[in-house]
Length: 404
View (tube, rainbow, N blue to C red):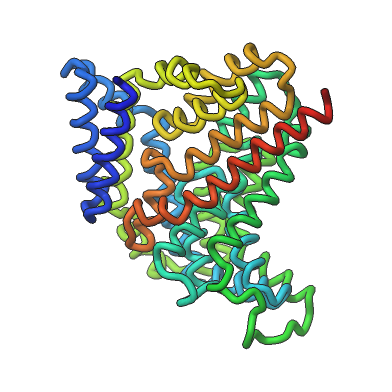
């Protein structure tokens, strides 16, 4: 019965979004529906919302959104993204490479607002070849591929800690799945729409000069990634350092950046972000996630497939970190010889779920950036994710058979 209530809650939210209600309205309404259906005590609901909206991670996210938007404005002012995109296109003369490699690099930055920079790259690269829904989907999808395997994200770090497995072996094990994600993304989003060969692009006079131009445009972002990944620096601190360095290296004046202090704060995006966290708080308070194992255990399917369903649907509801923390230990207890194939499968399912989850703030940011509805992004992402999950299961079965 509770699973049916959960379906109703998500159906309400998606219907409201499909009717073009902004997320800042749709999410609270869905939260109220959830509150009523699961009969959550009034006091408990308000406490959960208060904790979720005021916790350190939420405040950090809002500050990161502001800082990255500020850096994005500086990059735009110097036409840096466009410079890098053109250099990459000259190097490979392939639009698909430009539209996948650059957003992937951006995705190495473990911060939600990075999807906005990815959106700028996609916009610059594809022009009118894609509509805004497709651009929002491409910006989100290719920016998040790194989140499926990079041990800089909390869910993966947690999974590796829980299983005592090596990050290097996990990353190597995920490479075929990462390649498949790239192929599926290009097939569903670019095939027949974005020409692979870049026509009308000036010939490369010097490959070395093009590489230099690419890095000159991307260096603020790459510098932040190096500090975060290489030196385990706090994301917000790294971005602030880059902004200060870019101010001097980019020869900015105070008059140039003065408008950014106000324009970097987007009220609509902030309200939508808080609305998602409000919805998430009530959803977690319902405790419906704990019922998923018993629900899926009723079906006559292999054990690994039970955990695929639990991790996928559970992550849609509760997020990647919650499902990683709760289900990875249980899955390895049920399948003790699962090893790296099982870990790759579970993390693939969690990753896939987050690409269509209404609680995933990056999706909201990408939709806001292109002025489209969340339902449109989910519609374009679903076929890619469905094919990827089938591949992930087949990959698990094949790899498990080889090491058996």
